[in-house]
Image (cartoon, helix red, strand yellow):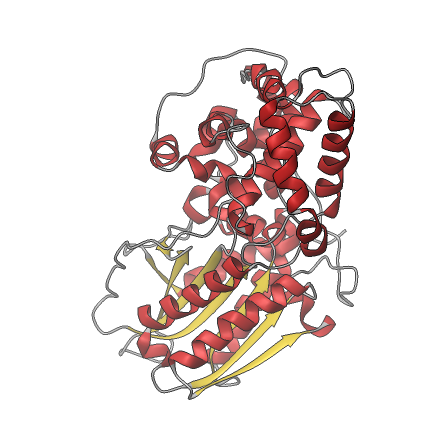
Length: 422
């Protein structure tokens, strides 16, 4: 689910200076589509992986992945835009560009109204690619085959993402045996707050500190009228407040690459305009991920328990795969403190330095890779990959990106034990 860009604009009442360029903004400049945030289609990186310390070999992977690219998650967006454009067309209040957009939208209307929330071909291909990349990156884990358990939420786009991933893994090596499961019995491992979860618990929320300092953040709202003027000759008959209408248009725009309809909106909104608002929209995303971060405690507990079972010989699996949603992998990124996502800065301009919404993109995934040393059976290291890239954790280590499993386990078990369900 994507937190919107424009319908929060008028909550910023004060003024301040825009932050200077930094690593996050430099990456955004290199690819403005990163500003699509949770709508950003998965990108395969080519960064090399750090070799494991001498004597350590990978033997087990614990994974959590978001479903791949999909149609917009809620059918209301398509219906709202349909009503908006139809009314403006009837009243002859569309610009030439607005009318061209309306015609393209109406041509795709049946597809959109049918496909809402469902996985697209691109989403399927993303998970195929991630599976093959995992196999190629860690051949020692998979080359002899073995048992794998894959579980997903009850939502179709997650089930199909799981299927695409698992099929590709088996094509890499037919000796791999995968049990796929989408069941109420396994919801705690993927979507703990699902109402059908028999073990569902309520966890406390805690707002990020930057929210108390939003009066320091400056937002330029002129984009609202700029976008509207490209579509409508007058805004007298809009079917919703101006900022909400522009929010609909922005959400549609950033979803188009996932559904193979790029170009539908012409130049009504540009990538650069979305990028100009990314730092602000990133605050909205971080706010809901941080506030709800404790809901993923059952997922962390599942990761620890399944790893314990493998290490104790109670499980013979070579991998545990989980397929869920941004509303869980996002908070998981924060609670694990991946690349500093747990830092909770007071200054809203600093949030972008600890979390970037494009890291929770379509098909985003976390891979925790386990390495066994030669010294003893409990000589275990772990490395975490976020979207295929090595990541840092707040766990003490002298050999990052590798961490001792005992330290990892102790650190996160303490966090889980410190938060009591309500």
